[in-house]
Image 1 (tube, rainbow, N blue to C red):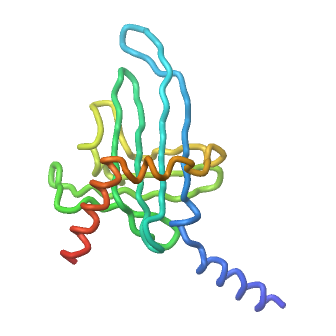
Image 2 (cartoon, rainbow, N blue to C red):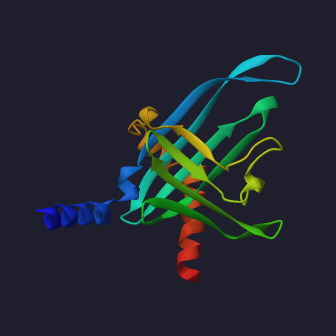
Length: 166
Protein backbone atom coordinates (compact mmCIF):
# COMPACT_ATOMS: atom_id res chain seq x y z
CA UNK A 1 0.00 0.00 0.00
CA UNK A 2 2.82 2.42 0.90
CA UNK A 3 4.70 1.49 -2.31
CA UNK A 4 1.56 2.18 -4.36
CA UNK A 5 1.10 5.60 -2.76
CA UNK A 6 4.77 6.45 -3.33
CA UNK A 7 4.56 5.35 -6.97
CA UNK A 8 1.45 7.45 -7.59
CA UNK A 9 3.17 10.49 -6.05
CA UNK A 10 6.13 9.98 -8.38
CA UNK A 11 3.85 9.78 -11.40
CA UNK A 12 2.03 12.93 -10.29
CA UNK A 13 5.32 14.77 -9.77
CA UNK A 14 6.64 13.64 -13.16
CA UNK A 15 3.40 14.71 -14.85
CA UNK A 16 3.56 18.34 -13.63
CA UNK A 17 3.62 20.59 -16.67
CA UNK A 18 4.51 24.23 -15.94
CA UNK A 19 3.52 25.32 -19.46
CA UNK A 20 -0.16 24.58 -18.80
CA UNK A 21 -0.06 24.81 -14.99
CA UNK A 22 1.19 28.42 -15.06
CA UNK A 23 -0.81 29.60 -18.10
CA UNK A 24 -2.93 32.67 -17.43
CA UNK A 25 -2.86 36.32 -16.45
CA UNK A 26 -1.74 37.40 -12.98
CA UNK A 27 -2.05 40.92 -11.64
CA UNK A 28 -1.80 43.09 -8.58
CA UNK A 29 -3.21 46.61 -8.20
CA UNK A 30 -1.39 48.69 -5.59
CA UNK A 31 -0.69 52.18 -4.32
CA UNK A 32 2.60 53.61 -5.59
CA UNK A 33 4.35 56.92 -5.04
CA UNK A 34 6.65 59.64 -6.28
CA UNK A 35 9.53 61.35 -4.48
CA UNK A 36 7.43 64.50 -4.00
CA UNK A 37 4.90 62.53 -1.94
CA UNK A 38 2.31 62.16 -4.68
CA UNK A 39 0.64 58.77 -4.73
CA UNK A 40 -0.92 56.93 -7.64
CA UNK A 41 -2.16 53.45 -8.54
CA UNK A 42 -0.03 50.89 -10.37
CA UNK A 43 -0.59 47.42 -11.77
CA UNK A 44 1.92 44.58 -11.98
CA UNK A 45 0.97 42.06 -14.68
CA UNK A 46 2.36 38.70 -15.78
CA UNK A 47 1.01 36.80 -18.78
CA UNK A 48 1.89 33.16 -19.54
CA UNK A 49 0.71 31.71 -22.86
CA UNK A 50 1.55 28.19 -24.08
CA UNK A 51 3.40 28.19 -27.42
CA UNK A 52 3.93 24.43 -27.69
CA UNK A 53 4.06 21.55 -25.18
CA UNK A 54 7.44 22.63 -23.74
CA UNK A 55 7.50 26.41 -24.26
CA UNK A 56 5.45 29.39 -23.09
CA UNK A 57 5.40 33.08 -23.92
CA UNK A 58 6.00 35.25 -20.85
CA UNK A 59 5.32 38.95 -20.47
CA UNK A 60 6.15 40.72 -17.24
CA UNK A 61 5.32 44.36 -16.46
CA UNK A 62 6.19 45.49 -12.92
CA UNK A 63 6.11 48.97 -11.39
CA UNK A 64 8.18 50.56 -8.65
CA UNK A 65 8.53 53.78 -6.68
CA UNK A 66 8.94 57.05 -8.60
CA UNK A 67 7.63 55.70 -11.88
CA UNK A 68 10.32 53.07 -12.43
CA UNK A 69 9.35 49.79 -14.09
CA UNK A 70 10.51 46.48 -15.55
CA UNK A 71 9.29 45.11 -18.85
CA UNK A 72 10.26 41.73 -20.29
CA UNK A 73 8.73 39.50 -22.95
CA UNK A 74 10.12 36.24 -24.30
CA UNK A 75 9.63 32.52 -24.75
CA UNK A 76 10.59 30.29 -21.83
CA UNK A 77 11.26 26.56 -21.76
CA UNK A 78 9.77 24.10 -19.28
CA UNK A 79 12.38 22.76 -16.83
CA UNK A 80 11.09 20.49 -14.06
CA UNK A 81 8.57 22.63 -12.10
CA UNK A 82 9.48 25.97 -13.69
CA UNK A 83 9.55 28.03 -16.85
CA UNK A 84 13.02 29.42 -17.62
CA UNK A 85 13.64 32.33 -19.99
CA UNK A 86 17.18 32.77 -21.34
CA UNK A 87 17.78 35.85 -23.41
CA UNK A 88 19.79 34.98 -26.52
CA UNK A 89 23.05 36.74 -27.28
CA UNK A 90 22.13 39.87 -25.30
CA UNK A 91 24.52 40.38 -22.45
CA UNK A 92 24.45 43.30 -20.04
CA UNK A 93 27.40 43.92 -17.73
CA UNK A 94 28.73 40.49 -18.73
CA UNK A 95 25.53 38.72 -17.65
CA UNK A 96 22.90 36.95 -19.72
CA UNK A 97 19.31 37.60 -18.64
CA UNK A 98 17.94 34.36 -17.17
CA UNK A 99 14.56 34.43 -15.43
CA UNK A 100 12.83 31.52 -13.67
CA UNK A 101 9.09 31.42 -12.97
CA UNK A 102 7.22 28.89 -10.82
CA UNK A 103 4.35 28.47 -8.41
CA UNK A 104 5.30 28.39 -4.75
CA UNK A 105 2.28 27.91 -2.53
CA UNK A 106 -0.11 30.81 -2.96
CA UNK A 107 2.30 32.86 -5.09
CA UNK A 108 3.54 33.00 -8.67
CA UNK A 109 7.23 33.73 -8.19
CA UNK A 110 9.77 34.95 -10.72
CA UNK A 111 13.45 35.59 -10.19
CA UNK A 112 16.42 36.59 -12.31
CA UNK A 113 18.99 35.31 -9.83
CA UNK A 114 21.75 37.86 -9.42
CA UNK A 115 19.86 40.69 -11.17
CA UNK A 116 20.79 39.30 -14.58
CA UNK A 117 17.86 41.11 -16.26
CA UNK A 118 18.53 44.66 -15.04
CA UNK A 119 18.61 45.95 -18.63
CA UNK A 120 14.83 45.43 -18.67
CA UNK A 121 14.30 47.66 -15.61
CA UNK A 122 14.58 51.26 -14.53
CA UNK A 123 16.87 52.33 -11.68
CA UNK A 124 14.57 51.23 -8.84
CA UNK A 125 13.21 48.16 -10.64
CA UNK A 126 14.24 44.53 -10.35
CA UNK A 127 13.03 41.14 -11.50
CA UNK A 128 14.67 39.47 -8.50
CA UNK A 129 12.34 37.80 -6.00
CA UNK A 130 9.21 39.06 -7.75
CA UNK A 131 5.83 37.58 -6.96
CA UNK A 132 2.13 37.95 -7.60
CA UNK A 133 -0.77 36.32 -5.76
CA UNK A 134 -1.76 32.96 -7.26
CA UNK A 135 -5.40 33.81 -6.54
CA UNK A 136 -5.13 36.67 -9.07
CA UNK A 137 -4.71 34.12 -11.90
CA UNK A 138 -7.31 34.48 -14.66
CA UNK A 139 -7.72 32.94 -18.10
CA UNK A 140 -6.45 35.17 -20.89
CA UNK A 141 -9.60 36.15 -22.77
CA UNK A 142 -7.81 38.36 -25.31
CA UNK A 143 -5.52 35.76 -26.95
CA UNK A 144 -6.10 36.99 -30.52
CA UNK A 145 -5.07 40.54 -29.57
CA UNK A 146 -2.11 39.30 -27.51
CA UNK A 147 -0.86 37.06 -30.33
CA UNK A 148 -1.04 39.94 -32.80
CA UNK A 149 0.96 42.25 -30.49
CA UNK A 150 4.45 43.37 -31.43
CA UNK A 151 5.84 41.99 -28.14
CA UNK A 152 4.48 38.51 -28.86
CA UNK A 153 5.65 38.50 -32.48
CA UNK A 154 9.13 39.73 -31.49
CA UNK A 155 9.41 37.13 -28.71
CA UNK A 156 8.50 34.29 -31.06
CA UNK A 157 10.92 35.55 -33.73
CA UNK A 158 13.70 35.73 -31.12
CA UNK A 159 12.87 32.21 -29.92
CA UNK A 160 12.72 30.77 -33.44
CA UNK A 161 16.11 32.34 -34.16
CA UNK A 162 17.55 30.69 -31.05
CA UNK A 163 16.04 27.36 -32.01
CA UNK A 164 17.92 27.31 -35.31
CA UNK A 165 21.23 28.25 -33.65
CA UNK A 166 21.21 25.40 -31.13
